[in-house]
Amino acid sequence: MKKLLLILLCLSLIFSTCKKNSISDINSNEPITHTYINHIDSVKTIILDPIFEKYIIDLGCDDSLDGYVLTAGIDTITSLKINVGNINDLTGIENFFNLTNLDCSGNQLTGLYLAKNINLIDLNCSSNKLIDLDVSGATSLTTLDCNDNNLTNLDVSNNLYLYWLTCYSNNLISLDANGLSKLDSLNCSYNELTSLNVNGANNLTWFKCSFNLLTSLNLSTNTALDIAYLEENQLTSLDVRNNTNLTKLYCHTNQLTSLDVSLNTDLTFLTCRYNQLISLDVSSNLALTNLYCYNNQLDSLDVSNNTALTTLHCKNNNLTSLDVRNGNNTNIIFFKCEDNPNLYCVNVDDPTWSTSNWTDIDSQHYFSTNCPPPSSYQ
Image 1 (cartoon, rainbow, N blue to C red):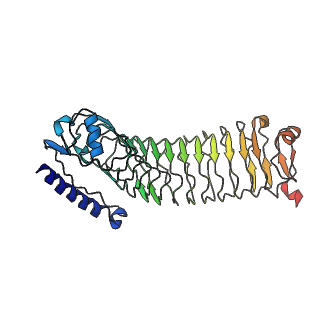
Image 2: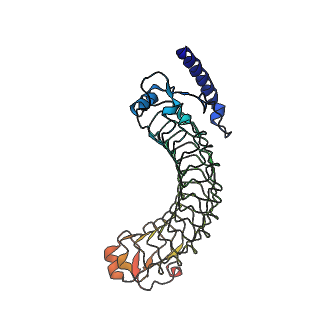
Image 3: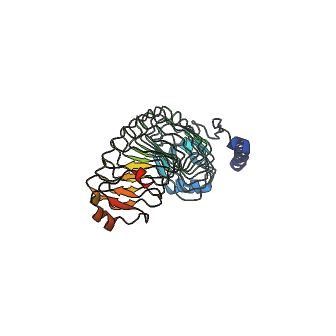
């Protein structure tokens, strides 16, 4: 009789799973609906995956591989680390009522339904095959790692205590982190994002949304932002004037025509290469050590205020004027300015030293402490 019941329940679950994972549902942003076959007051908790049950047996919470465990044997467990590699189904996890830490990474899961695990704090479900992930009831969640899956939708609207969220390498087309005021770290790179909302994530300090399809991004409320990786998108504009705590900004390989970093006085690292910038003012960025602005359309560049500079890469622009007289040229260990055919003279501290040490230049380039105006070469 118990085997017959299990067979009927399995067939019911398979049918509902197949229906849920139809193509139309996969591409939908509708809330995930899932039928739980276990109930909170069940004496026995059905476990559909024998490998999952074998893991529970190894914990000493069950004694036979028969498709169920006694709920009383699992409802006090607070931590599970299930990295066995070939679990397909975690049905029964909902009756681990006191679970606070769950690591089920590196398995074969396509759905993970944790709406009833209200005490969950840390979740790592990365490197599975997840299409569905429901954490709507895990309102105490502070850490969520769901990278390397097949998710097209991720709803974290109820997870207001999230501190660390990484969901890179999925198929997400939108992500709403609005109101996650405790969020400190967010990595949503390598998706297909065309929409990303981080408004209200006021404590966000580390942010990576690289390799997506974003054309716009509002960072005006993210005033605590320290490091931002925004490269490899389709951004046509970027406003970081409110992000005065920025120390590192990666915005290369976009479609930017302008970039204002005048208020980002703590900036030490800036890479804005492979854009369409026609001007760049770094005169206020006195802490700047690394500047990569190559492959743009810059016609002039002045780094004479940037005394901390150690790297300057400005090749392949339209430069006619380049001023590197910062009084500290000997600390610039990496210098490249070739492929600027309209540039002739480069202003430096010591022409002899620069000639000996900076060799990545065009044949017509020479160094001087007082270059003539560009018009004199016309």
